[in-house]
Image 1 (cartoon, rainbow, N blue to C red):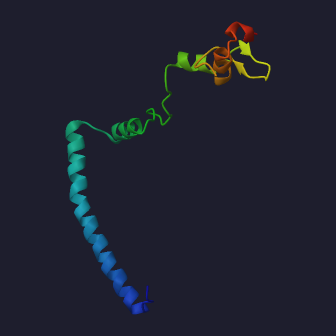
Image 2 (tube, rainbow, N blue to C red; image 1 turned 90 degrees about the vertical axis):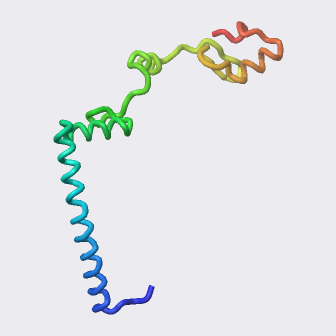
Image 3 (cartoon, rainbow, N blue to C red; image 1 turned 30 degrees about the horizontal axis):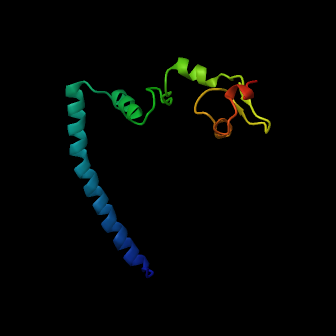
Length: 117
């Protein structure tokens, strides 16, 4: 970009300031319309903030929403005892999908009970 002279920069700033003032003037009537509509509908800024928070996955006070119920969360946080272990140290609690090491051993003819802890 070519360097502009100080006079050219001042002229450019004046044009931009005029454009900004026009944009601000155009914004004022719209703001008045929105305020009037909010007043007519009984909507407050707090209502809008709460709606914005909910649409962003936040609770009304700005805390993130938890996935699942609190009971489910407590169950997921618990430590579960290991029920199966192989000679290589692989373990499984018995919850969820059967791990590959155990599925392969079962296909090889071993019983799941052979790995029971």
